[in-house]
Image (cartoon, rainbow, N blue to C red; front, top):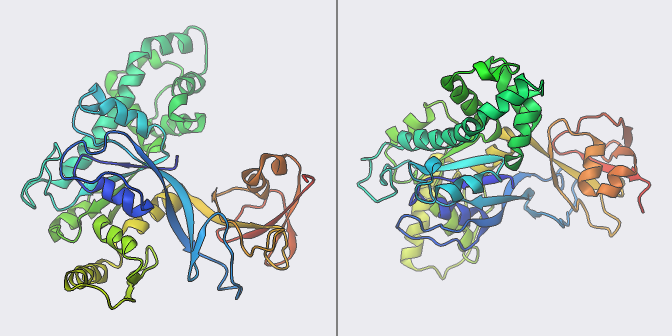
Length: 394
């Protein structure tokens, strides 16, 4: 799972999920609408090489809309969170179990301040959205701390008396959260704590380590939702808070996605055109409002939020594997058939394994399809690369 959509009830979280996926998560104006997690496929966007190469592409694992490639990512709409989740309050245990499956979290915050700390409706501007950010981070930090603190004496004994490696011991315990050894090394470095004597750590040091580990393994992007009705000072305060904040209107994005028979709209773009004369006055008015919001903010912000989470936070790039480097096709003649999200620093062999394990195992070499030149095995793939993999696999 790549992305977890999180936040307290009634902030537009399920609307955000549906806008990303065109799914059918239940939407209502009351707490705990989302009880069971919704899992879907959303799309990040990148410039497709088809226009540069003057080709008509034929995507198989993704989509292309007028030169914008839409690449799928898995997302999960997590049950709404209320204070005390780390202690099991509300749907806290389920929430924490669900986020363990995500590599990055998008925290949907009601930037309008029209929902209180429990997710109940209140007057616009009466609740501080910065408080929502604090409470969610505190709950996840407390969860990490409780997991560590519960077993700390046992950890300490194994590490100090049995001379076991701190990183291996803790990584083993956190395996369900997909926390890797390199994550723990980075967290230790940031905290400047002694991994050989964890028995000397004070509770406040363990809390600090838990917080840093959470930031390393569950980074958070803030979707400042309901930007169309939010007081401007709320948006500015959120942007100045030190967090990565993307103003969004999930409702506007969902309306545009659903209106595909009436409007031409590429997800993530800053405008749309009406293509039907069958709209009612009410529909025209709604689209006029959305157009004005997009003019002010540049877009609905939903795709931008996803793009930032995937490309900037998780440091993914888009790579296009082909089998015929002359025509940029697969063996069936599909032009630029697939787009893969790869980690920055990945090599051609990593791409081969991504395509298929057997291709990775029998990897021989790779070719840059643009230059028709063979590339080194340790070449670091670049965003937009078109690569032919040569392997012994049949």
